[in-house]
Image (cartoon, rainbow, N blue to C red; front, side, top):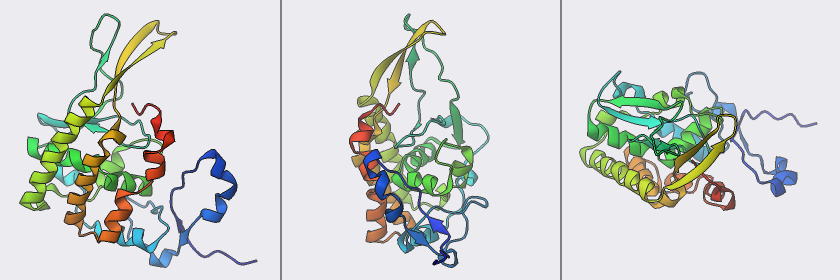
Length: 248
């Protein structure tokens, strides 16, 4: 029996009808060809030299160095994960039947020294590059702070025009999130409460997210082939029929 010597494979998604063909579609790449770990001692989930090449170009300092302990400029996120990871510069609305605002549970904050830094990072964290990076290194179950802090992006190293572009796109993305938001009504029998929850559909903002990835691709020096991989990463699942369900 042939012994597999490869050590890396990508994180795999599949539809139910694809299950019989799952093992034949797995791809591996040898450990000797692998990159230095960017997130602790986590082994990256990659399966091609192209992905290895992208990781090799993400040699910026970690995002943690662009953050501060406390300020008036913050981004928000929750640990919920689906086909997009959602970051906001506002608190998503939840209201009860009396129209009273209720603070979301488990809302996390990231703090920055200025509004423009906050907006630039907001764009980057909503990018497909970050979504891919997160899938490569995380457990792909919850949005944990570790992957956010380790994301290779030193805001101070962004070229001035690139910083301005990311800042503009981050703000534009938030406007688009709000414009495309829906209000979902959920009744919780045990709590005897009905809540009206602001729900976002980031797949409808993919055209803006793509522009963010183009800007980040220029910062990292990605080739056209590498950028194309990022723009189309998991697109069948992120924009396909399975993504038609609520993404709140």
